[in-house]
Amino acid sequence: MENVMKVVICPTAERATALTARVIEQALRQKPDIALGLATGRTMEAVYGHLVRAHKEDGLDFSACRTFNLDEYAGIAPTSPHSYRTYMNAHLFSKVNVPLEATHVPDGMAPDMAAQCAAYEKAMRDSGGLGLQLLWLGENGHIGFNEPLSALTSRTRLVTLDPATRRQNVGMFDNDLEQVPHHAVTMGVGTIADARRTLMVVTGAAKAAILARVIEGPVTAGISATVLQMHADCLVIVDEAAAADLSCRPYIEYLMQHDPELKALLA
Image 1: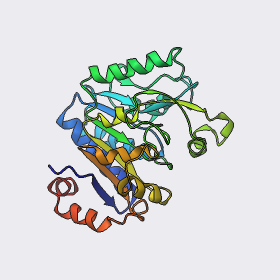
Image 2: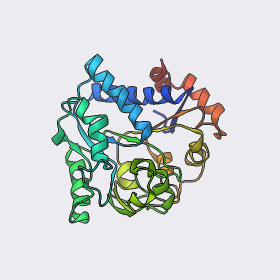
Image 3: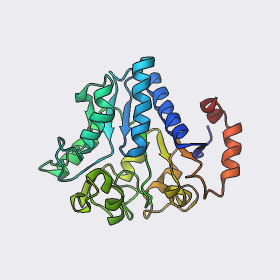
């Protein structure tokens, strides 16, 4: 298999999220006990909606899988309406047959953050490692909450959020910036890169400029998502708006027509 970042351009955001869900569904059907790395955000709501439908209408079985979320806000209790645990329960976990004890989200209220982060890494290793890590792209190029200057070898840890990230996520906090935490727990860049497969979905014109830097620019700690250029099995699914600034688009489209793996996915 070619060691090339695979990119698929879909005509709409809806098609992009549906295709993303299909990739996850295929991975789960091929390996029912897979350890899935999961993400949050508005784009993911659509992805999880497709997975819930696949569970209810096509019998997609989550009973043997394990899940590990990328991140959580520090100082936010798991029961808070603003927590990512609450988000995941609402959009996926409560709607499919995954055992709650098999779902893992960092605890923003852990009394010993360093110990929790070490335990989170161990739990992922004990699961056999992440078979597939789902990602979205922050406006400053972060994956997880790995803000600019995050070491490309970093592991799960407590981080300080970029003010731009806090502004981007204010919608989760009743549009009140004062409520948005300044810190979060996140898988590290190195942790994410350890996943056997990585799957990033990017939609919207606001992400076009940063997506071009992630795919075509140099690998740099200033943009944590650029580490995906070095990943052995990375698939990036985007919509037309997000793809607007890609100068390598002709080759991307050629690969979509001629790469056997992509042809099978798009058939």
